[in-house]
Figure 1: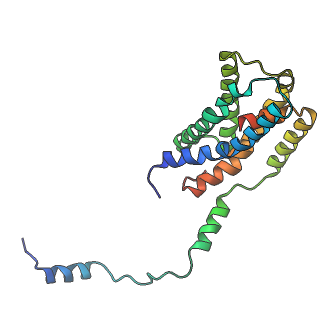
Figure 2 (figure 1 turned 90 degrees about the vertical axis):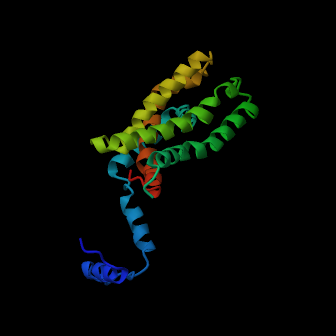
Figure 3 (figure 1 turned 180 degrees about the horizontal axis):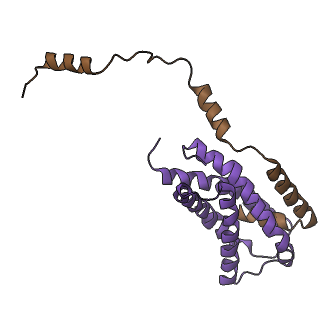
Length: 73
Length: 138
């Protein structure tokens, strides 16, 4: 088995791995992070609006439902 | 941020009931002392103070555990919690012999759907947001 000294080993590693290019950041990553957070948030769909409307209607019919909801939240 | 996902799920879960607690206590304190509500509310306040936040945290941990197995959406997961939580609340009232006011029993058929819808929307939009914020995609 051939033994390499430090210099040879360094050269061996450099030859084995291609130089990294384009490692600099192309810009600020925070706006992309904010966009990702915004995209992953579910939108208020028509079904959600219908449900919210039903809940409001039920609360108007029976206001006693409101403390029930508050108590459980 | 890949470590301790269950701890993060727990923290995301307890946020809403912990914040809501201050509003609940305000409403019930005003009802008790300003409007002389006769029911001893302090006997049942332990439920929203101690049980609800922990239940929400554990429920979110359960969602994290079940999600890889093609589980239901987070909104419906939250709506199921409404059933579990109200059952525990009613069981607790029976256990401590707490008499619910008459208006509460009359409103119950309306209150339960409101609670289930409220839970569905809060879990779908708010708990899910906290999950994303803490690196657990909801």
